[in-house]
Amino acid sequence: MWNCIKNIITVFVTLGVFVAGIVCFTPCWTFYEMKQALDRNDADRFSKYIDYPAVRKSIRDNLRSMMQDEVNAGEDNSFVIGVENFCTSLTLTIPHLFINKITPKNVKNFIKKQENRVSNIESIFATYDFYPSYNNINQFVLTVYEKGFTCKIGELIFQKVDILTWRLVGVRFSY
Image (tube, rainbow, N blue to C red; front, side, top):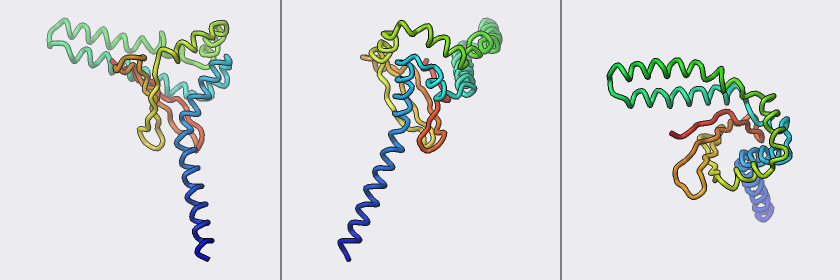
């Protein structure tokens, strides 16, 4: 009887560890799938891992924050006020010039242009290091560093869609 209970407990513990391992590994699997899609020039497969409106909002907010920090770092004089007004107008213009171009169609066109340049994708992974971490159980962050340097370049933020699926929802630039 005792052996039967020990076997049942062992099975449940093993199953629990296995499920926890799978759930913890799924964001890395998503990133791997995105890389595979890029390697195969499969824009549709790559795009299914991106929440485009959330990424656009994230980049827009990050750029505004960077500009506001630069303005706040200046002294209180008329030049700084002029720069602040310029930055405000620039942050209203940037979304229309660049950020709104981040769409599945434009990503597809970009990947199509890269078809003959597979080495570009490989050079990205040869140039940068990616360090995974969790912000919380529903948010995974992939921090990007240039190889050989300790200064972080930025972060890719993934949000859990369901138990095994994650989507890129944000990009944070370091400045």
